[in-house]
Image (cartoon, rainbow, N blue to C red):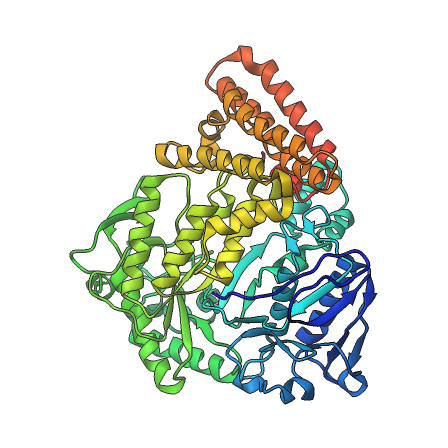
Length: 626
């Protein structure tokens, strides 16, 4: 997206000759510049100033002072965030694009500034992103959270070339990557392992925020698109039973439904009620870009069977199966409901657009309304969400991509809310390049919002995929291969070639699984996945890690990173032995009971050996039964 001419000098006690370098930040291990903020800086600017101060000190040993503009000295200065000093250089905060981040030299001033507020007043992190961009140019990398994964090059002198110019505006207005922090599932795993909740939280407080900042995870988008009618049955059923889905027995009763009621989506009175509520919600929250009109998920009720709703289904729609209350097997073949639900969304959207132009309504293409509509095209104020795509089955992948492309053709805005990061849990995987290419292609098709779930913090198993994904969300025009090469070079130096070969080997396993399409991605099919990690395959991975250690001999930081990656194949071997023995026992082979007990014991010992670590999230693995 941009090129720059930053020159970072590494010297011992002297300033190297660097042509027209203009801003000396650190000279021979001593501070040579001052960090300057406004008198009342934004939160993003305050955090950016501290972020820069900390990292520059870790690089050089020199702590640059932080002052407000009233106390700004002459000489070299890093101007962080909007102030009268950046204003003098022509930066007007209101003229910046949403989240725009700029790093640029002006004489002896280095401007580090970004868009820190939406026009409606919502807080943004543009200056924080700008600081992360500068640190990246200084060679700092966050491969994974924590000290081992943080690359801090050591230099006594840091100088910036006078033609430095970084300027970034995101294509994606939400770059969502959900961190799996503490929750009830984690607590269950911790209890089984005998570990402390406080210790778990202490680990997750170290470095995770910096990793997300460094990769510009976040965005200007504010609002929701989740299941929207959780309280409707309680609120309206007594007075308006006709608003709820007619069941196969002809009633509209949905007892014990909780927050999962089904609606009669063709009922225009209901549609007007929903539209009025959404208008009120948007008007009460001017900073919110989008509110949800998405149906409730699951539940014990059938989709509406009334004649009017059925008439909204397109006769040429594909046949699908969904839950049906009066069938013995609880499944019934039926026309896809995509046209029905797309029309429901459209009817609401047309009313809302009259009162709230430019605001969005979020809804899912999901469940019985996941296939592409035959006739309906979505109104321009609908942000449609796609849940799908994984990299364990080519057959499923190609079907999902076709659905995504179809919805993209029928909508003005689309968001992606996949669960693909949880697939194959417990084994090393690398689908970084494929995922990176898909992010780029989807951005070209209109993708503006992502909400990746299930980042369970298995960095030794999937860390490269997490990393490339984050980088591609920040810049969909980037080259995934270049990102991977930079990752290996920055983090592993002389061992980069072998580490790249290791990751290529993991990618080859992932690709075999993908092409075979035999693994369903479910826990009850794990023995199929385990079979791909045979001794010969793991030995090939191990050879690359062993060669990497030889290449990095004498460098404790790089060796520590290689040891971190080693957790991946080591755990894969233990997990493989467990699942193959379990499958054999369940298939009737009693001779494998001792092998199963030994494999389970070895896995438990491994959890305790690794302990709380960014390498694998043992508490999650334990909860899920891995």
